Length: 356
Ligand SMILES: *Cc1c(COP(=O)(O)O)cnc(C)c1O
Image 1 (tube, rainbow, N blue to C red):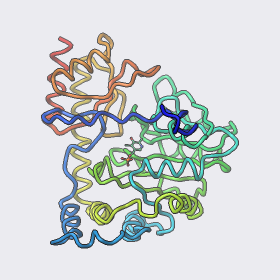
Image 2 (cartoon, rainbow, N blue to C red; image 1 turned 60 degrees about the vertical axis):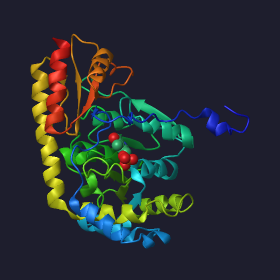
Image 3 (cartoon, helix red, strand yellow; image 1 turned 90 degrees about the vertical axis):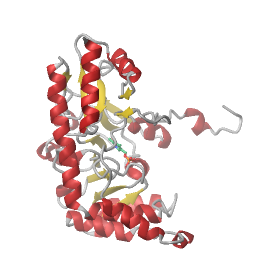
Image 4 (cartoon, rainbow, N blue to C red; image 1 turned 90 degrees about the horizontal axis):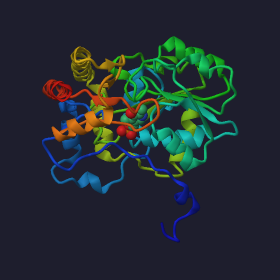
C-alpha cells in the first residue's frame, strides 16, 4: 500500500494463478497445461518468422492479426468479422466483461467456477450474483432461466469440476435470455464436448471464447479468441483499440495459425490426453476416490477418508503438484491435470502409497 495507489487498486482482489515452480524435475499437474508439445509446424512457423537475424521483429505485427482470424474463420466455416483474437483468452474475457457484461443488472455465473470471473467484476465494477451448482456439481440450465440478469457466463466444460453441459441445455439458456449476452468459455471443449460455435449464426446473444493454451499445447504463446455476432466482435475491437493495438506479437500470430491449421496433430494429441484421463479416472476410482465425470484435461477427485489438503501436501513431498482450492463445497477435492502416461502413473502410484 502506498499513497500513490488509486482507489481502484486499493479495492482489487487479484487472481492467484497456479504455481509455476522454478525448480525442475517436478511433476506439474496443477495448471492444466498439455503434456505433449505443440505441432512441429508451430516451431517451424516461428523459426521462419524469426529468420536468420530476427530483423522482422523491428516491425510491429499486424494489429488485426488478419492471418489468424482468417485461419480461425476457415476452421469453423464462419466469417472473419465473427472472430476476435487476444493475448490469451484471459485478455479476451477481460474485454468481454468491460465491453459486454457491464450493465445495471447483475451478471450470473456458477458458485463454483473459474475464479477469474469475480476478479474481472472487481476490476471493472460489474455486479454479479452466483448461482449454486446442483448437488452433483452440474449446471442446471433452469437456474439461468426466468431471472433478470445483465449477462451470463460459464465455462463448458466447467472448471474446476470438468462437468459438461449439452448443447441443448445451452440453447435452453440462450432462448430464455434473448436480451442477455451468454458467454460460453470453451477453454476445455476440445477434450470431449461439442462447441457452441455451431450456434453463433442462430443466436446473436451468444459469444464463445477459446484458448490455445490447453488443447493446442501453447500456454506459453498467449493466444485466445472469441466467436460471435459481428456486433459483439465490434464491441471487443473497440475496447482492444482503446487499450493495446498489438496484443498478439509476430511469433504468436504465425505460431497460432500453424497450430490451427494442423488438425491431424491436434486431434491425435487431444485423443492421447482423453485416453490417459479415462485410464487415470478408473485407476483412482479403484483406490477409492470419487472422480467427477470429466470432459476436460483434468479430473476433480476426492477421497472419503483422506483430507484433500493433506493429500496435496503429501504429493508435494513426492514432487507432484496438483491444485487444491480452499473454497466452500470443494475444499475436499483435488484438481489434477492429465499429464503424460508416465506422469499419470507416478501420480496414481504416489496416491496409492499415501492412502495405504
Ligand atoms: C485456462 C483458462 C482460461 C485462460 O486461458 P488463457 O488463454 O491461457 O488466458 C480461461 N478460462 C478457463 C476456464 C480456463 O481454465
